[in-house]
Length: 503
Ligand SMILES: Nc1ncnc2c1ncn2[C@@H]1O[C@H](COP(=O)(O)OP(=O)(O)O)[C@@H](O)[C@H]1O
Ligand SMILES: [Mg+2]
Image (cartoon, rainbow, N blue to C red; front, top):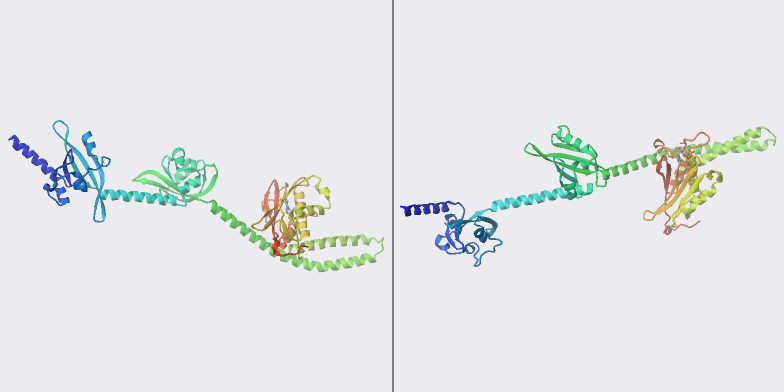
């Protein structure tokens, strides 16, 4: 009876072994095959007699020596008396590579020693290829995030930073490692801003719940500087639960600089258009007035000659002549502004211009409380221009500076050049009252003056503008504040091979 029970039990075990749907072997501790299940025999297309007595490495790899312990856990299973498994790549069946999970489980005898080892072989090719695909996908996504020109930052719901791409490291100025350890999303913005963004993200109003349309924001970089940016955000959900936030930042500095440049160009174009039409008007007026003025001067002089030395009317006529002279000067300036007077050009050093202009100023009393600072270039900067006309410009700037400082302060002259651009520069700065913002666009207009009648004609800067244009240059206000003003004159640098005779 007992024997029958044992046989039956053995029979059950064999049947269970055969029911296992994947290949399985019973091995001796010397790796000799004792038995193989049906799935194994079917898979290998063989029968039991042909495998029993062979080694495991032979039937799987046609090898005479066992696999190394580094890849086969067989000896570990014997030593530890517990199951271990290993992933192994098998010879490809067709084109596809095949991966298997080989599980070795110890079968113990009545004394608890390992008697046999059961090896189960499960095909995990699909699982491995899915995992490979998912790793590949993850790496691809990582590359997409890393290569984005926009800065991408992800943080958990407590604000701890989880991820930053290269553009984010560049924009914020710290590495992802630093961010993971020390930074919180709140520190990326000015105080209070992170909370506001979070509130907007959760609201329906700014792109739908969990989303935030791109909006203007200031961010704080590692140097503590405020950088203008645009941020679009999203909350990442797992089911209903909010697990993280992402922000995509766009650095606006380039765009703002380009807009500013464009604005400057537009202002310059508007300014030169205005100057051109004012110039035409000025030229017309000057021309119309010039003829009658010549008449008034001629006849007044003739009348004066006929009058007796003691005649009281002489005084009146002399006043007429004086005022007419003033009118003629104004007309001359207007003609210069409208570029009707052609310059007499010569080649000279820019540095000499300042000295020449100062020497022409007869009223040296003007400078008694003025400190003159000359920051002149040590290089030889030559220009080809009308020296007397340019001196007139420098004198205008000096006079305006002295007026703005109420005759007390500092006048600074600077000269320098930009060789590649072929430009020579002259700067005249004063420590005066500065020019109010709303006057900026008008100071070069003829007759614009803020000085009281009799003191200012409003022709100094407009004449200077005309002269500089006539000499191929440009005059502008480089800086102005309540501490003073800097005028900048730009002129073409003289390049010797232009073949101009030195006068
Ligand atoms: N250096 C300066 N600092 C402050 N304001 C200035 C300066 N230069 C010019 N201005 C302003 O520009 C106006 C026009 O100057 P300008 O054409 O020389 O005429 P005027 O000197 O006769 O007033 C001045 O009235 C003054 O308001
Ligand atoms: Mg003036």
